Amino acid sequence: MAWRAPSNVTMSQNPRSLRNLAYRVGKPALLNGRLQKACERAFIAHGGPITTGDAAQWCYPWADRPDYDHVKRALRSIGAVKLRRLGGSARPLLWAPPSYYIW
Image (tube, rainbow, N blue to C red):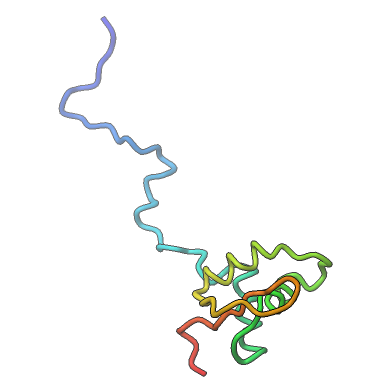
């Protein structure tokens, strides 16, 4: 006869490594990423709306061809708002600072 646990004992369905996730802080990485901090600094340095290219220069100062998708994702994650597209060959987006900045 095989061994069975008593019927009044309940086994946890979560593995041991996932049991404390309910007690952690929600969104621990919000505003703590390298690109998010660089985008915030770009808004502060420019004192108002910036283009995607301006933010990319702050996020990737060493790169010849920065990853604009990552820059746009970082801008969206900090709460920046797309205002409009500008003219030019690549038609960059103009971004407004997040609402929690007081200008």
